[in-house]
Structure formats: structure tokens, C-alpha cells
Length: 260
Image (tube, rainbow, N blue to C red; front, side):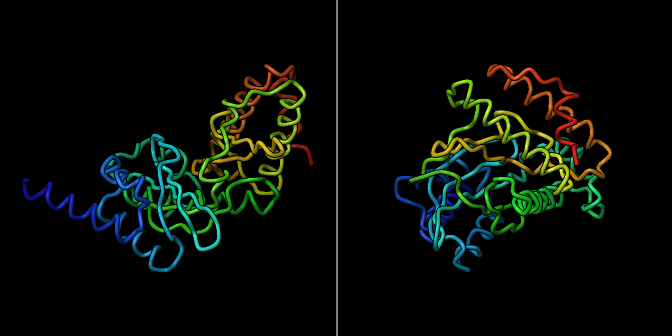
């Protein structure tokens, strides 16, 4: 075994022990080597030592910029979102964060952008939750790691809207709630989701309530592209919900969202 591979295996075994990786998920570090680099592991150690994390489980989702893992906290189930520094798409993040007035002093380096993006999602989730939008409750943002409430039951996440089979009446009811959440974001939280679609909405099967997720790209209304992003969200929502008999035009939906 060469020296680099030996060190990698040693580090993975050490992480498995210190972070209490569940036995059935012990291979996740080997599979997700581009996520669990040395700085990320150190941050996870710190959070574990503070008692924020008790144990880490398997992967919930894998995205272009980040991976999400199940975890156990001291009192409830958690989701750990880890933004990949080495393989993140720098240009994709740039359009959303460099013009955000909350992050005008960010240095134009990938690591700084990723850290700011993590803080940005934390702040956006806090804003959304504070005005009554159902989102995962944010708990900690540390460097490239965001810890939040796990939206699911018994280690199984709630399904994405795109995967839920609905009758027309239920689809219309979810649509009304989604529109109200968009209005609350716009009028009360001063935010636009900026990537809203059936891929970024979970559905709680207990009451069919929608849950907005993935708010790292969400921008304030002061962002120069906020109106463009809002219109795109509106088009996505109308396109998806048209299958349930929703006939509103983008202009009609915009008027609801922007209503006082």
C-alpha cells in the first residue's frame, strides 16, 4: 500500500471511530472522499465534541454542490449538508452571492465563496422560518457545513414533490400553500427562493404540507436579478401545478405574491 493510500485509510478509520459513523454506513467516507476532506473532518470533529452531532448515518441526497447526510443529535434527528470545496461550481455560486448586499466583502476565492454560501443558506432558512414558511430549522453553520432539522421520519426523508402522486384537490391545496409561502418570503422575509420547483419542495405525507428546501441561492429583493429569479420561480410552479388544473398565468401569480 503506497503512503498516500495508507494515510487516507488511516484517516477514514479514525473518522469512523471519532464521529461514530454507524456500522452500516461505515463505507460512506470511502465513497464520499471528495466530501470528507481533512478540513471538513476537522470541522465535524469540532461539532461532535461540542455535542451538536452524536452520530452520522447514510447519505440523504447528492447534489451538484453539496451532499446531505442523516445524523443523530442530542435531542432529535438532523441533516448535515456539506458543501464540496474542491468540486463546487464556482461560477454558478458567483451569480447569486457576489451581488447580494449581505455578502459584499467576500473575497473572490472558491473557499471563501463556499463558506459564505453556507452562511447564506443558514440566514435564508432562519428568515423563512421566522415568517411562517415551513423549512428545515437551521441549527449551525460552520465553514462548509450546515446542520439543520431532518425533515422525515425514522431516518427516511420526506419525498420530493416531483415523486408524490396526488389527486387534483390535494395538488391544488399544496399549490395554495406554496403560493402563500412565496408571498411570505417576498413580503415578510424580503427574499426570493430563486430555484423553486418540484425538485426543491418536500411533502410531509402526514398532512400533505409542502416544505421549501435548498435555499442557498435565495436572494434579497435588493439583488439586481431578484425579479428575474422570482419570475423563473413563478414559471416553474405554474408549469408543474398545471397538471392539477391550475390555470393561472405568471402575471396573475406574481400579483398574488406581491400583494400587500
